[in-house]
Length: 143
Length: 256
Image (cartoon, rainbow over all chains, first blue to last red; front, side):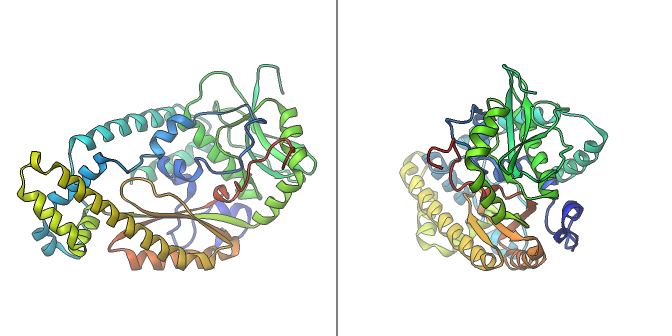
């Protein structure tokens, strides 16, 4: 497979078509994969770490509170188990089963952050070579 | 290049003999060139960083692209996103020179290997159905809270949520164990990572020799097929070894 060979092969989509190109990763992927990872240079030696706080909000939605429990309870109580018996085995693509107050609050905050992040990203445009790559990642992000 | 007001953004470390050129723009603006600063057999990929605020998402992408481009050509040790040093001298004298031996050892260990990241996601509704069907305590508490008016069932609903949450955690642990057990033997190293989002099932990073990518991908595909009725798998790579470079902070050499 092309990927296994060095240099240019690295950039090609593997023949299986299953492995996702990192450049095509969503912002959430990028955040997950690189935030807080990598070689750490000691605080006495470096000057600063930039941009961490805002991203941390998006990456660390901690699920361990009364709100979470109530949300779970609500979601479980809303399940239509009869329908589930009939639908068993069918993949369901419902976006969400809840709409409680706690959840909408969380969502609002999240979307605000996301918007900010995406807004920043869109400011950059740019050289022809990158435009090609960008259009590809856009497509993937839309999925 | 270094002026008194400027600072230096550090992307990663490569071998000193490595002449890899980076065309991708650095953080800060779309035309920031990335260059190398070398000392004692190791080199850092760096760029000048402008004054003023940075756009987190744009710069995260820039950091990502620079390292992706470097990793396509060579072995690179990613430095944590957002790392800024005072000057080129500081990069040489505080990062590279005092840590050269250790950085070279890390580069050797990562040579010809890539990171592959595997994440699993539940369909929440389906997961909750599974839990109600399989955990009698949850089913009982669910019936109880459904009989009571909302105001009277507050504590019962919290208890129900706790039970559900514990069941979700148990399934996460079980599924992570299954996936790691299956994929770890195919990797040089593996790291379980915290799941993100309410629908996250598991997340793990694997360090895989380049020639082993095909076998690894087949194993992931097999797992994805096997779990497809419960879990959607997201498989991203090849990546620079972000998760395999951070065993200990590097400093000015006092204890490194």
